[in-house]
Length: 123
Image: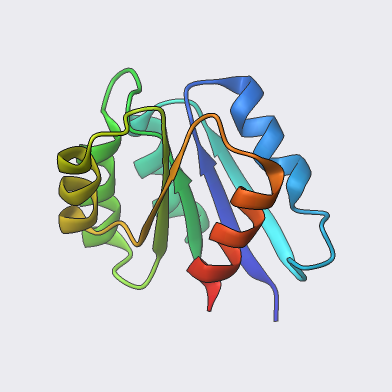
């Protein structure tokens, strides 16, 4: 079965970096259903594409990641969200998890860290 992934980050470089990792053989059957550069677009896209998994930045224009996580968690309660953020304080991570995130990766991240975090998210 193919898993559906949406990548949300205001950095085109980060969105493309995560997308390129999806060809790794340890991550079989992942279809990228959307790339969003801000929270408002992410909520709209999530409603339309119904991803199983989402990577989510926290610092974005129009709607930050925390608000976006809350909206998507209401819209798609079964979607699993991995926060990918340069914000590294524990309180931020705990707030994101309280709103519905399932994991946290700090930027900058290595390819190996991202792949392992996605495997944990999907298990």
